[in-house]
Each structure stands twice: as structure tokens, then as C-alpha cells.
Length: 263
Image 1 (cartoon, one colour):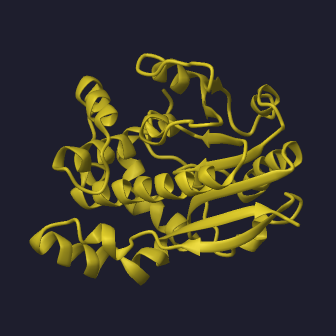
Image 2 (cartoon, one colour):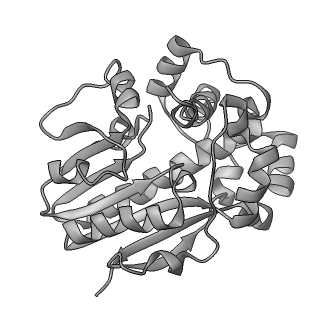
């Protein structure tokens, strides 16, 4: 895998870590994959604080997705930049269909642990290439999750991807996490992704800049470190995380934005 794809091991480790501790997220598949792969993370990329953050992020995406799927009559879940994530197991396709999309070498690795069925497919593609969306029927409500992906796309590339989705479906819901421009700047020296090879990253401060030409509108910003999840930590860890890694401090670096089809 190239350096961008290797970053998938950071959230995989984080989800396995919190799952083993029995907090925030139950994810036995991540535990299984991490135990077998044992990718050599080091430095900040293996920080327990980052692991808590990754677990919380995944739990928030899961909850939002469940809510959107329950509301849609014919949900079409699209997980862009899926990596080795087990969201299909944690949430399930339910009454709709589910498509996990990532680079060919990632999907090749993913197929060692996941099996397709009538409601679930894995698509090998760079998300910037429109080929992948042609394999998905344009009917139903597209519910799109982009977890840990947007920061690797330039703003114009991100708008292009959103525009492809907006053009293909009449009804779209999107949730994505983004770096701020400050976080992108700081990442050159202090980002955990540097510990697995690093990559260029980009930040978004105003989500409305992603509306132009996409057919989507900004809905709201979501809290990334909600108190109920912080409360699952224990003792001093709970206090330290709340004081140093949560709230306004977190928002200075990281945001979670929701979009939907324009009326």
C-alpha cells in the first residue's frame, strides 16, 4: 500500500483499542483484523488519546447512519474511503443496499476479511474517478459517510466527488469529518499520519464552500467529542480528555459537517 492507504491502520487500531476496553464502540472485527495484521504503528499514531478520538468518531458516524437509514424508504449507503472499517457489520445494510469504496489495493486487502452478498458490495476505485458511481443504481436515497477521507482531497476534488453524488441521486445525505486549515498546516509537523509515511492534507473552515456546483447544501455541524462518550472513560483519563482533547480545543482542529440535497 502507498502512504495514504497505510493511514487506515490508525483508525483500525483506535477502534480495536476501545473495543477491547469495552468502551465507546463494540467492534470485534477491528480487534480480529488488528490482531492478525499487527501493522507497526509508532509515536502519536498509537496514542491512547487518539484511539479514544477514533472510537468516538466511528460511534458518531454509526449513530447518524442508523438514524438516516431508518428515515429513508430505500437507503443506499455509500462508505467512501472505507479502509478496513467494519461499519457494515456494526450497522448492517438493513432494508437497503451498501457499497464500500476504496483504492484497489485496500479493497484487495479488505476482501480477506469481508464477503459480499446481495445487499453489500465492495468497489475498487479512487473516489475521484467517476467509474465507481456508475456501478451504483441512482434510485433511492444516497446516505454517504466520508470518515477520515476529506482531508486527503483538495477542496476542488472534494467538490467534484460531492457533485458526482449529487448528480447521480435525487436525494442525498452526507456526513464527513474535516480538518480545519489550522490543522492542515500543523499536520506538517505534528500529525500522527506522519508516523505511517505521511501525506498532503487539506482543511475546510467554511463548509458552505463545498456547496457550489454539488447540488448539496450545508445542514449543520456535529459535536465530535460529546459528553456521553467522554463519560465512558475512567478516572483521570476522563478529566484529561475533556480538558485537553474535547470541546473548543477539538473544534480548532477537527469538524464534522452534514450536507443534504438542495430543495
